Image (cartoon, rainbow, N blue to C red; front, side, top):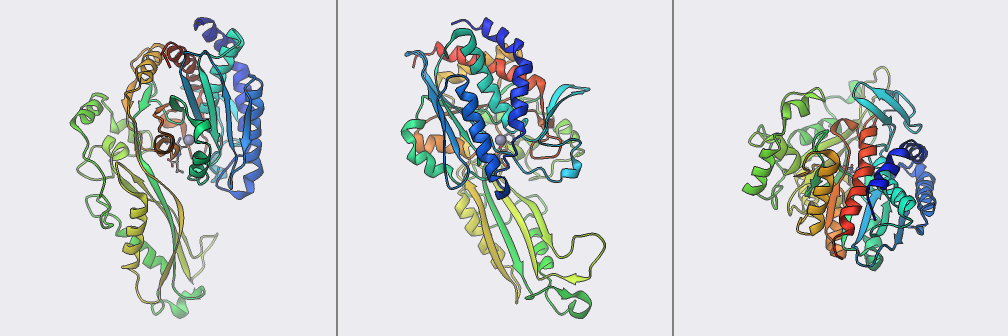
Length: 462
Ligand code: BES
Ligand code: ZN
């Protein structure tokens, strides 16, 4: 089967492909918020219906959370069988007032850097997921068939810690087994250089609420005598780091590996420029461990971040309240063999050891996943790198990734399947943030990249 008419087909169909993506983007599939449960089902149904237009039989599978979508199509007998994974859920849109347009009514916009599609999920991850489906559509319409056997697997809980994933994967091990899994949920190295990411950080999410007085109090009447839980919370969280950016929770760094000289050298060759990276978001100075480079900070070192904090009165005007409670959401990015459960346990013990008289603390867990390290031995890695080089006119880089995609580790642990991570997002896509966008170039070249990758894979023997 030849590639070039497939690429031509992709170019000719770009506008219709964009319309299909915009249709999917209209569905408000915010997985973390129960108010959007039906929308998550709608997005899953939409994908099943879209695959049906390619004569691919897929189904939604209910879970205690949002449904999974799975379907398989057979390709030529001697070609490899791959699994493709993407997620159809998106992050909440707040603060809504910072969006220039309705986040769920995506539009193509001209910008000084070229055309972009703007809306929630354009880059993370509906736009990326659709690059693969569109490449399959073009193959199918040109050749009547696909060049490899493909299992499609879409999740609707990735953005909320994938709580239903492990039991689902255990139950459907056989159906999910393929020669290799491809995940399209990451970005380019810089806006021109494609990347295959070989490391992902893990994540441990924790919410804590410190309670002092049994009700809100007048701060004139009680202030001074009554303990203020906001003061306790900020003191504890303020102790998370020392002056050199080292996290102070006991045994926190256990399992964080020393970076090999080989990887260090590979990363040095990337000539990562932290001044531009931080400059693009209005910053100047790397703020992590003082003895690490910025690239190490985001790819190979663990972190602690306060993701949200609330207490007392935050509405318009002013209220002299002494709050009864103070809460925070805290997350830890993990590397190497750091154990998210041990981190949670040690964090809680460390918080409790700092609680003053009359204060209590309660917790809520928000997901735990280990870091993963990909093996690049499978011949598909080199085949993919070559295919990417042809599309982007520059060799693809093997890089790390600061984000977390819980399923990546589970493909290996549960199914015994290696994972190849590649994608077309850019650093300025504003994922998880207002005005998220996906460059039309990412969408178009992403579809073409998948067509080339499928072509390259089809000549590897299964
Ligand atoms: N697509 C991202 C992962 C990512 C982030 C890749 C940055 C490349 C660069 C993914 O959808 C995501 O945001 N994952 C969450 C997972 C979490 C909620 C368990 C993350 O990393 O915060
Ligand atoms: Zn994502």
